[in-house]
Length: 135
Image (cartoon, rainbow, N blue to C red; front, side, top):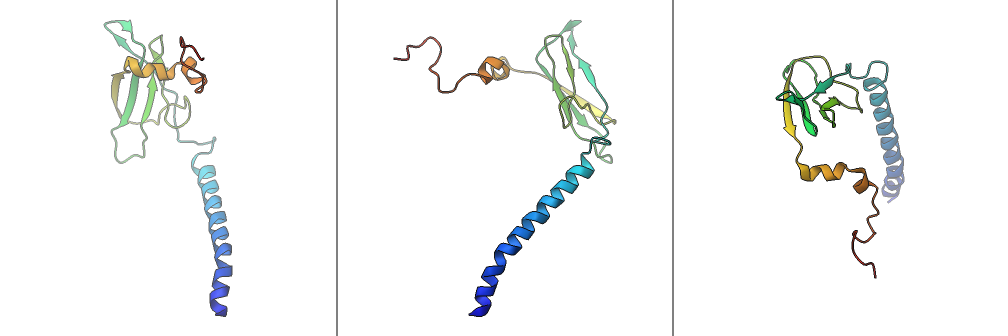
C-alpha cells in the first residue's frame, strides 16, 4: 500500500516537470528559429495588380513555393484601393523567402469584404440591429 501512495505523490511532480520542460523547449525554439536577427530570411515583396492597365483592388495574391528541396513557406497579401499590397509570410508585412514561386491571384468576393470593414469589427454584438426599435 505504501508504494501506491508514493506513486500518487510523485505524479504532480512529474506533471509539473514535464510542463516546465515543454515551456522551456518552446522558448528555445522560438528564440532560435524566429529571432529578429535572422528570422526566416524574408525580403520585402510588394505586388501591384492590374487588369487591362487598370489597378484592381481587393485581390488576394498568394505565392506558392515551387522548390521542394528548399524550406520555403507560402506568402500572401490582399491589394488595397491602389491595387498594391505587401506580401506576408509569418509576421505582418515581413515579405517572402527568396526562391521560385507560382503565383495565385483571386478576387475577394464582395460578401466577405464586409468582415474587413472596421465598423463591423468595432460594433457592439449586444446592440440591436441598426434601424430597429429597441423597445
